[in-house]
Image (cartoon, rainbow, N blue to C red; front, side, top):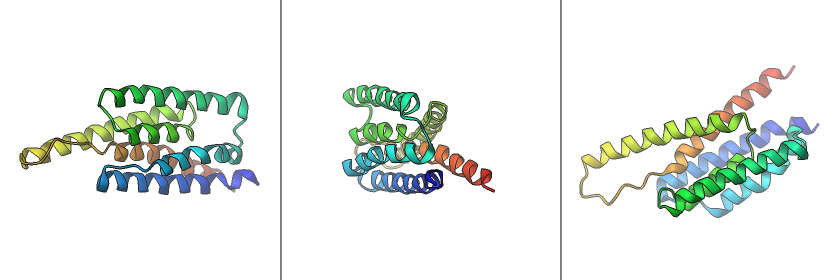
Length: 159
């Protein structure tokens, strides 16, 4: 019974990521309540997906913490916003060690594309202030890529 809830939780996560991307685009803000909600819902997903607390969930939580700390350094150096860091940490709680590199790769590619597009746009609008890349969009794209594949896999395995 618990496994039947997992796809719905992933769909809820997808909507949360879409909301984060939209908010980062419109206001350059990812609300704390959103990242906090994503993080707090992860243990429910672990239960629904049949992920054992030890060692699986412990490894996931450890990797999420390491990723959060790594990107917190980028924040401290002015390279990333605090909302982006919290969103990455929260999203990582939903991903297995095999999914995490895929998410980071897609996130990096999307972030690079967004940055290049904004630099090109800025050339035509020199009066604009400095470029603030809404990296929440790239984070969301990376997350949506991985969880989209996961949802499709779950649906394909159903009788």
